Length: 55
Image (cartoon, rainbow, N blue to C red; front, top):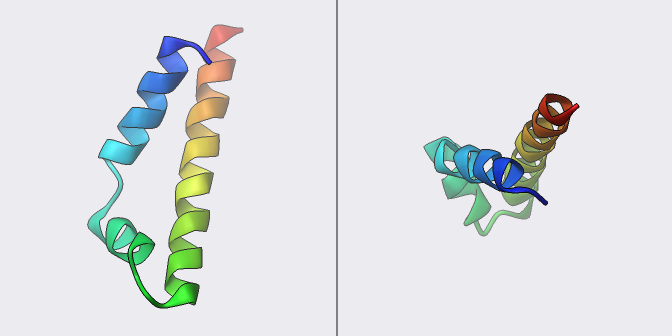
């Protein structure tokens, strides 16, 4: 993984909304799962953008 991709991923995590951060730490499994899926989608988008920019 190159530095540009790492920077994009870090940016996604830094900009994660508060509800996402809270739900990732939730005891409720369904809330946690929704947050995990949302974060995964955000990360996939950032990685795809990074790969597209590299082409």
